[in-house]
Amino acid sequence: MRSTAVAQVGRKRPIVPRLFTETVLILGKDLILEWRTRTRLNALIFFSFATLLMFSFALGPDTKLLKENAGGYFWLAILFSSVLALGESFRIERENASLDGLRLVPIDAKAIFLGKALGNALLLVLLGILLLPVMVALYGVTVAMGIGRLFAVLALGSMAISWPGTVYSAIASNARARDVLLPLLLFPLVLPALLAAVKATGLVLHGDPMLQLGSWLGLLIAFNLIYWALGLALFPQVIED
Amino acid sequence: MRKWLRPAVGVLGFAMLVVGAWFGLVKAPPDREMGDVYRIIYVHVPCFWMAFLAVTLNFACSALYLIKGSWKLDALAESSAEVGVLFGATGLTLGSIWARPTWGVWWTWDPRLTTAAIMLVSYAGYLALRRFVEDPERRAVWSAVVAIIAFADVPIIWYSVQWWKSQHQIQSSPKTVDPQMVFALRWNALAMLALLIFFIWSRYRIALRDRQQEVALPDALPPARTTPVQASGALK
Image (tube, rainbow over all chains, first blue to last red; front, side):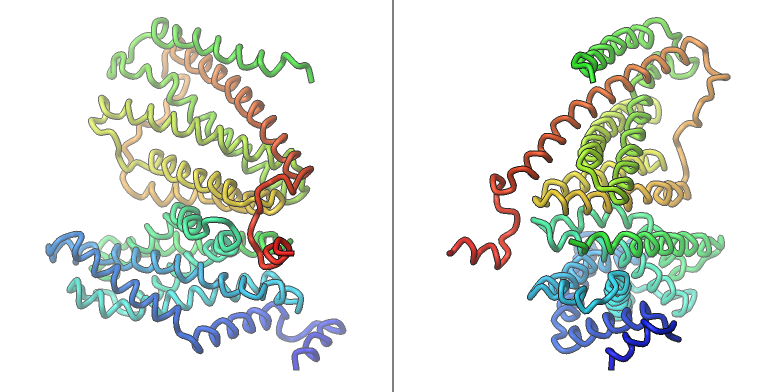
């Protein structure tokens, strides 16, 4: 079925760009792999639950403090989990040299980047949705500005971690000491995104009397655009031999 | 190039720094508000200028490397990042020492301080990556990618932290400052520039020889990664 699709590309411009179909293929492949084992998602869920619990213990039973900073704990839990998720997403490609196989198909390196990054972002959004009730229960927060805006912040923040994270994960998965390297490279880089996501989440949870939400969301969107473009431009270089 | 040029730049830099210390500590008048404490500015500010120059050079070399691969560009990128981290760390430490008597704290979440600190960590990560990858070609490409991504983060960090309240004093322009002060600052900056060139140049020579050695004698290096192919090859 795909061979015909590829053959058509040679003759005339296809209605759906090839980059898009390949991205969907990669994304679908990763989601199927994830669904068949569910190891990664299970591990992530319990890891992030544990992280949220840890914050409650580390910062004492001061419920007011916990409630005030709930957004920060929520995003730190997601950020820590993202390191596991990102690392795993290229570890599975290293086994049996399947990344080389993908490139020989040939799949466009940009499609691998987009598919992997969207897959990771999707995983983080899912994780965030699952963490939300836990956060509400543990820290006693209420969502002041509606669940829709919270979802937008979650999606933007997860993508902001995923774009550079996917590039760095492809690099770190082939280096020595990759478990140290990925957070060392990624954490300082995503700091502005983390700051914006935490602030925006805090505003959505506790209300936004000064109308600051827009500027933090703007920062998140700008961060996403910059690293989406840089990732598209640089990722092919990373996996080229 | 002439053999004596590189050491000469180094000697010149150190000598200028000694004279610059006299300009800064003795010749320049004390500040109206801060008294003598402000004199740390003559090393603190040039350190950051040089760190920023080095990081910009690192970015330029990394971007050029991806366009036109050359071991010289890679070696220059490595040396400029290392020297940049050195100057940045020195500048940050000096700034912290200055902040204690003037602001009353060692550290504050000011945009400039925070950006500098985050950049320092970013480039430490870049240097760590260079140590963790043995294959010289991959290391060059990957570190170039990381350098570009990290450099693009500078303005974003800057704006994101700026929305917190800023405490750093506004940059003085030469018009509002005593000419003696301006002169001392410029002199010290030139001295630091000579030192920066000397350091990067010296480090570059070592880095370039490392690359040549790695490329010429790949078997003399410790095994890069134990891939299944290599492991089976060793068994035979």
